[in-house]
Image 1 (tube, helix red, strand yellow):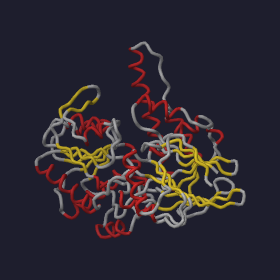
Image 2 (cartoon, rainbow, N blue to C red; image 1 turned 90 degrees about the horizontal axis):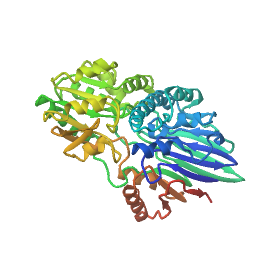
Image 3 (tube, one colour; image 1 turned 180 degrees about the vertical axis):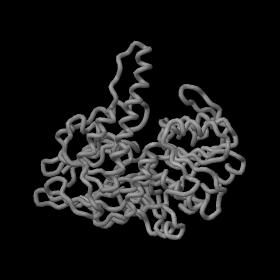
Image 4 (cartoon, rainbow, N blue to C red; image 1 turned 180 degrees about the horizontal axis):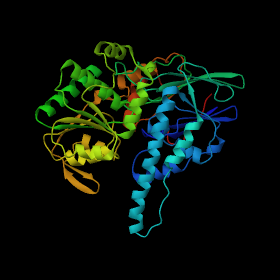
Length: 465
């Protein structure tokens, strides 16, 4: 049996790991690589295997860097099941359809530039129609329900606590009389996050493919992050400003809404309008409301005590139309605007940043990891000028970064996650992390007596002994 690391190797995005077992091929995730436009297009377009040769796909969760290249896989010939939890199935269906619209829009934008240079047009990576083809292939599974994606492999999903429906994947493999337990972490969440249940740690794994996004640092306690975010909202509102939060439409948006719900219910911050301005986030929030089985006990208790839903309250509005979105930029009263994308690269949040970045009353609040070469990273680095739609704007607004709101496990939990299989694991493969973060984590694990930790290169192949 063999693992082929075709994505999220020496980088964070583009999760894609191909297993060869019993003459069959099982793909773990099929995500979009996100980075510089030209490189991203080429990487995402060209697979290092024949899509029609893949026998099954297992999807850990719905984020675009894990699910976003499924339409391209299907477009190029894949037509077999895509296994996911029921919540992931629902969330991924709307996320990849939205991604298809973005691919079409990006291609249109690039082609206008290419036309001016006399260059031929490019095709979108895939279209919304291509993305909609994927939904028919999803096969929903409950957490901890056993299923057989390919002969000789029994798979189960376990709560990952990262976003709604996210899962670690347990694979009990039998090949030629040999039995191996492989664990794929997907993206590992955190303890005490709003809404979601805590992640389940791996057990008895012989091999593990594990994320390392924050291998170099631990996060502050979510309770402290709640306090930091509360203080940002309070001081911005009191000086008459707007809080602009670039947030991923799935996961982060709903957690922030829940936090603001609590803050205003308890009187911790002034009651000001809160807007979720992202069509995808609106659809995702509706799906959250349909999967209450994924909520933790604390959320259920708050809903019972407050006597209203976790993701709805009096000051909250979900923005659906472009005209409603534009109207927010004409207003000067204090408010909170939560809008996608989380790295401030596309979508309505770019317009909100452009219209509010030069007002010192306002705050742009960064609440998640930001990839290199994105506007979100430049804001997090507090660059004095930010290029938006080809023009430079002076950054006069405040920028707040709150790492404790991240949905990814910090260094401390990553170490705990890995050492939970210390007695059984033969090799750990660190993926979904930049080199500094992964190597720091590798060093910490070595200090704890775990010498067999690897950081595979892109397209490395490893035979499991």
